[in-house]
Every structure is written in structure tokens, then in C-alpha cells.
Image 1 (spheres, rainbow, N blue to C red):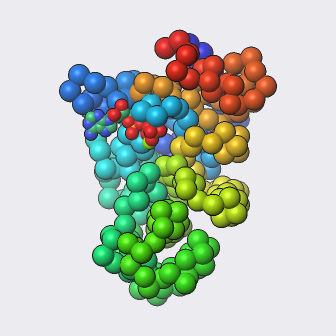
Image 2 (image 1 turned 90 degrees about the horizontal axis):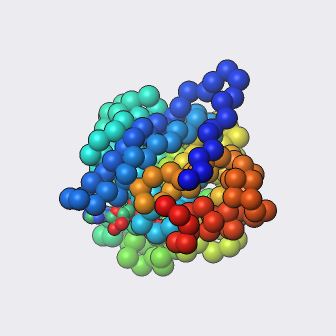
Length: 254
Ligand SMILES: Nc1ncnc2c1ncn2[C@@H]1O[C@H](COP(=O)(O)OP(=O)(O)OP(=O)(O)O)[C@@H](O)[C@H]1O
Ligand SMILES: [Mg+2]
């Protein structure tokens, strides 16, 4: 097993996300089996790993939707279930979680009110975000009428509503066309430059390369962690695809 220790920056930055020895058990099966990683405030961190590695499980725990069986999880210095922390975290689930019998705008308005935003703040922000995800024309259509990619775009708009301090994205660009995907990434990178912490999962190595650090997961634990360059060096290869296959792929030693 190779484990690249995160390099401590001078004048250590606070951790936006802390996972310490986290186990999530379903009966005898451990979906998370001692997962440990930290995301520094302001960092863009990518969780990678094959299907079933436990990425979504980890993200649902930090979004406060599931509880860890054991171990320590902190989000912005608090427990994931802390009501103070929820309005600071934008979360885009892997499976779109929108109300099918509401329109796009009604969904965003509902999410905005759940985030505690005022009516005026919601109205302005929703217009901006609909434009960004190119759904202005669809604002008053029911979610059921949207294509899969469009639902995904509406879901991203919902996650961005509160101008979150921590943005958590579970496979944010699956099913999104290439032009819009580029637009999403411009936005993520701009938010990153402005100080937003971003934790995302992805199966796309071109997206992983854009992260300051990535964590490679398999079977509920981290196998390697570091900058894309460090991960490639640890695997002894010159591209991230091969590093992934070597360190976390089905043929890799557990
Ligand atoms: N409610 C549940 N009951 C039992 N097992 C579960 C449950 N939810 C998830 N699992 C199992 O936990 C493991 C991790 O699943 P998870 O969805 O976290 O993987 P993932 O890394 O997000 O995969 P993908 O890349 O396919 O999204 C899988 O083996 C899955 O079958
Ligand atoms: Mg998943």
C-alpha cells in the first residue's frame, strides 16, 4: 500500500473536512472501513475510486444524510448534523434529488428557503443561476419534463444557491454536455480562487488533474493521497489514468 502524506503548508490552514478512522457498516459489510482524509479550507480535493469504493457513502455522511458507525467526522469544525453548518455547505447528490411535481424555479425557491435565504435574495440568485446552468427557458417547467443532463444542471444550481463556504459535488458533470461541462469547471475554478472549499468525486481523470489533491479510495479506505503529480510519481507512471489503475484498479493489491 502506498500512502502519500499530505504536505503541511507553512502556517497550517484550518481543515474544512475531517474524516478520521470512519467506519460505515451495513451488517457485516463495511462500506467505509477506516476512511481517513482531510480537506483544507480553500482547497479543491477530488475523491476517486472504482464503483462501490465508498465515495458517495462518505459524501452522504458529511452532508448529514447518514451517520458513520464509528470514527470522527467534522465539517467546518462541527459535526455534520449541526444545524449551524448546513447553510454553509452546498451539496449536489449523485442521484438528482429534486421534487418532480414542482417546476425548476419552485424547486430552487424551496431549496433557497431551506437554506434560510430571504425571498429577495432567492429571486435574484435563482435568476443568475438559471442563466448559468442554461435553464432560464425551462424555469417554469416541471422537473419531469427535463432531460437527465438538465436535471443535473438544476441540481447544481440548487447546490450553488447559498454561495456555500464548502461545496460538495458527487460526480457533478455526469451526463452534462462538453460545452456546459467546461462552463461548470470555469465556475468551480473561479469559486476555488475566491476561497470556496470544493470536495468532489469524479471518474474523469481530466477533472481529477484540476484538483490540488486527490484521494484514491478502494473498499472503503484511502490507498493514496497527494497532488496529481505526487500520485503519478508514487505509481511510477506519467499519467493519472495509469496511476489510478495501478493504485486503485481491480488488479491492484488491496
Ligand atoms: N444502504 C445500503 N445498504 C447496503 N450496502 C450499501 C448501501 N449503500 C451503499 N452500500 C454499499 O456500499 C458500497 C459503497 O457504495 P458507494 O455508493 O459509496 O460507492 P461509490 O464509490 O460512490 O460508487 P460509484 O462510483 O458507483 O458512485 C457499495 O458496495 C454499496 O453496494
Ligand atoms: Mg457514488
